[in-house]
Image (cartoon, rainbow, N blue to C red; front, side, top):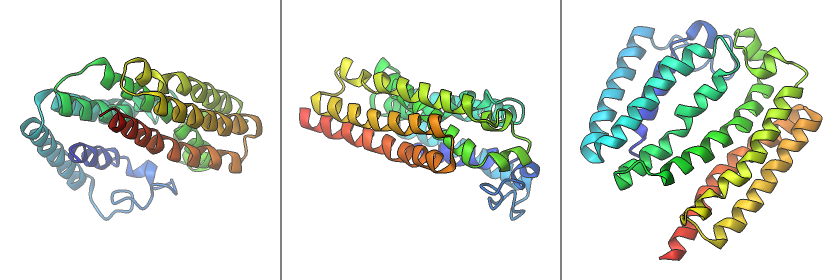
Length: 242
């Protein structure tokens, strides 16, 4: 919950692209694109939430957590948000702030930025790629109309999209096993992570082969199930150790 005050301003400040988002079915009903809120009001509210969140994290957790949260906000708003109009590589750039919340949580809980927290970062970073490639494929016409050059837009045959989704899904298997190597989890997590990784790899392979809307939806919903189930496995396995 301590991440929430920093998550909300990212959403608010990211919406300061109403001329683009109003053309996108997925985002057109957000407050700014829908003109229920003026850009200046959204900016002030987002900045106020960011300031409150940083103060709350510093006072309620520690300074390290606040620094990572600030880096998350700055990289999202000043790097990812403008880049997504210009290059398909913005998806990779955006995966960095998207994967930093576990590091914020780790820093808040342990007052360290140890390798353990960065392993959680790596899992979320790699996981995001098939997840967002699925979204990009499902909404590629909307993104094209909005002038956002996602990979499914600039290479409409989907071969590169499918190949990258499969590569990242394959990479997710060994990355998800890193907590076992660091002693963060045991055999139950290992078994579950292998099963989940195999399922994720299966839906990604199907999408890479077929490149259809049903295959993209399967990869999207598979990714939505994958991450929370993996965290539950990690928590339960950790609890067993005690």
